[in-house]
Image 1 (cartoon, helix red, strand yellow):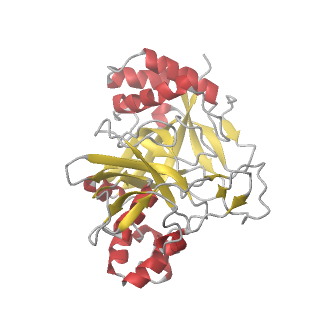
Image 2 (tube, rainbow, N blue to C red):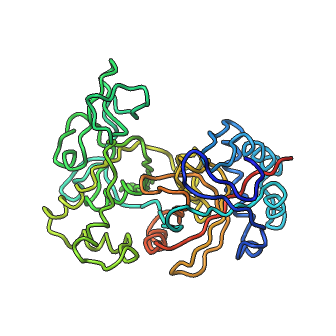
Length: 371
């Protein structure tokens, strides 16, 4: 990336990157840089294995991979002072200034719920594996039979694509007998929140923990069901449309109304099983590394290169948030240059933290220095 003091993304008018000093970042000195470095070292293993694709706002993937090699060479016992010195020596901070709109941050978590491997009256709602042939639609695919908005479709094996059923149809049984249920949950609301988060830990009767993570999706456009609360006057502002408010509202609806509300989000998520190798970490994210609570950030992957360090400033309900994070995930709702989603961890405590986060924020991208 050029070393100019103000960089305009030239592929689309998304944002300016404005050079600042580390001393301009509120809370930079007081942050736990060792925790940020540990998250970046997890990215380093992936960076060494595969150079990430450079995105519109950057940083350059090859330059980032080089810094990953340097981080890996330092080992895993780096203290906060040494970690801070590493970031200051090898990166330059650039404030992301969006051309339209303001910065905004939300929180996400990994649900942990009871589950069963067979259906019952108490556990009737399935989490499904993908149907055969479901894949992302590429730029060279024949889309003539598809809605232009579809991003995934069913391939018959001969290159002919057809739309996957949307959420409402799948809930009504459109894929029954065609897909494998991985596990069964108590309620459709629990399943819906797992779809939104893209992963979960499932507690089985024998005490085992089983993880499910994103495998595929129906490809239909995402719709935030929380918007229905605004449309119907349940909440007065987007800031009040939090995850816990949405969960409470959905639980209060009559079954038919609840199904209709959930079906408004036509996007449906399919899952695969994954091991829980380290209970302190989250699932393997879109960047190919396990999520670190409080240090992993979901970003718009079309704009920001995976594994980039990003300093986040926000005033959350729990207090000021001034923290160096690493871009390791993405999500359907994470759109725009100054948009982030903080991973808070797994289980109910993480949900309590994540559910309240819908706040203005500022983001500073750390761009590799030229050696």
